[in-house]
Length: 268
Image 1 (cartoon, helix red, strand yellow):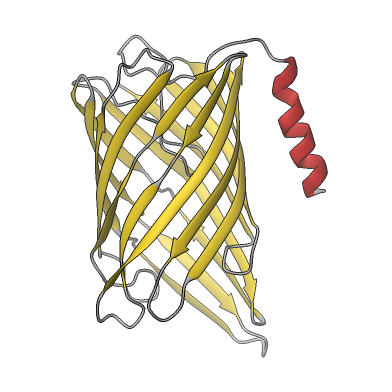
Image 2: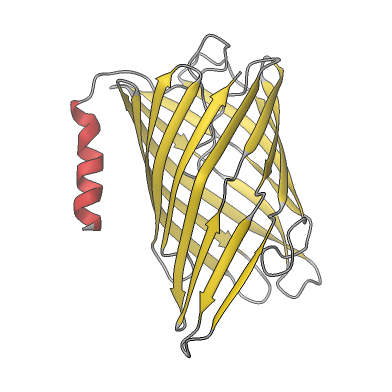
């Protein structure tokens, strides 16, 4: 089924009209977001405008070592404000999440509360209208979540969103990211790396995204490697509003088996 789904989603855009995926930062351009999927775009929120990008509901499930875990995120908003013609400030926060775990013996436990806060700053480094677009995106995670939901540690990093418009109306996005993470034993810091390649195509008011993602966490206790295939569909009913739906499929044991979400973004 996964292979069939992948083939259909890849093939669908081939019959689509040649329209570029929204990547511009101008106020009269269609909304450009850092969702869906895990990729970021080089575009910024137009100066003086606000933008909200949020999951309506996110469900994560994973089975490992005889234990099944299900997590629900009840919204996951990112609030953005355009500081200049090529920069914006962003705050992401999960106001409420619930985790339910069931082990091999049938014991069920639940944990709920708020999530961590992440503050990001994006600076676009290239022309918003060029075929090649580049931005730098430093961020810091503030440990506001309780133990079991977050690790209680200050972490951060820097991402470098890269968008490339190619013939045929396709957009290729690359997402190298360097992370500074807390050690599992809580005694120090170590590096991590996140990377992805995202291929998108717009047809009409819809945009289809296909993405391969990886995270390499170089913890001294042992490297944790994660891989996923992410697919999503976004719809722009009007230039300043976007709805999306998507799924991330884990490709190894360290990655959640499935993440499903629906979301909405608006600019005003």
